Amino acid sequence: MMNPLLILTNCPDEATANAIALALVEEKLAACVNLLPRVQSIYRWQGAVESASEIPLLIKSTAENYPALEKRIAELHPYDLPEIIALPITHGLPAYLNWLAAETLQ
Image (tube, rainbow, N blue to C red; front, side, top):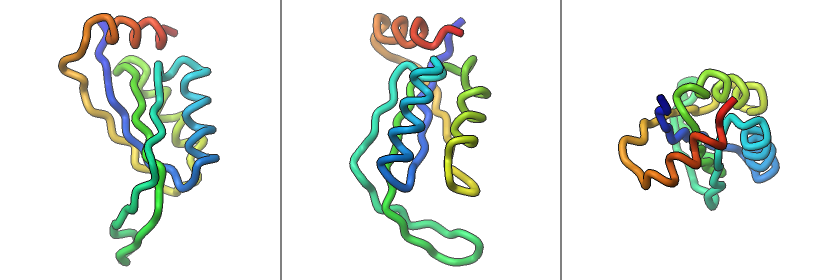
């Protein structure tokens, strides 16, 4: 049974975002990765309020691939603690969800 997920992460620059996106798709850990325009993130890190410009990634994959995908993002990501959040996709165009499953079969 395929359980589609939308995984979110932010990257510090375009080169990192492109490298992670390409690796995930080439390795069939993700069917598609969208690189969004830069956003400004404000967050607390090690007791201080920080601000950074980041590139968000929207990663389409499955729960079955999530452990390997999470591991691969952590390997490629330069942050000590990268944001990696997975949200279940509860509804979607059936043909798209079938494509997502077919493109991430290991």
